[in-house]
Image 1: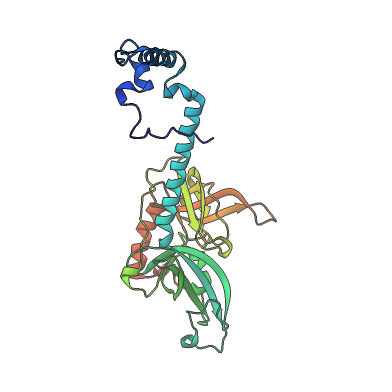
Image 2: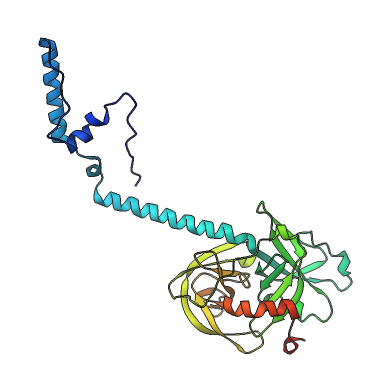
Length: 323
């Protein structure tokens, strides 16, 4: 329901002292009437006095024109719009930091130098998998899941390449080759690097997962099924979960959320209401035989990421994780 508020009075309307609203506020002090000087003037004075008295009786104040239920509904609409604007702002501020990752397998007779990464669909390469990631710093380092680039990490024949789509200032996507810097299957994390000018990169805002509470809002941004920069919303459903890692061990302390995470969301950021990254989206339970998400999704806590990624950037893959 839309409430129509009255327009402000024109400049030649009654003065504030003689307005009907003020007459109601001061019923014992009506505006003084001019002294009549003839029969016609006397009749005009009586009519004006009668009109003023009638206004006192029948004209309610503006607040009484609005039922309390309407005022409450207007407040609900305002709060809803305010909440929507907040979510839109979170997406607009965070999405430039999110990237779309493609794992490409090139033909055995194709030379690396001949692979054109400016092409949208290279004729000399096959898309083996897709995922998400986010910019870590101004040097072009990108955080993603290990399982997104696992084929690149274990490639012995040199036939896999990584193509990363970034977002420019106009919101358009452009591709760059992603170089694998390091990975840690124990935490399902990896670092890529793209060669892009610093002023064109917008790193994500890194938060903390230490003080998360069940029930607080969270937002997943990624590229499910290749649909770039998709936003899903939800809440933190649980904390301290245990999920399997790609190397067969387990990741402790994972974040559970009902924000939808599907194939292609892996490696993308899970952010809080301030737009700070609180986790890396990594896994979802699916209904057996359907591939459909059950709504039980998991993210690696950002505190684990903060401890792992700088080490990988400086030292690369640890000895225990080399193939």
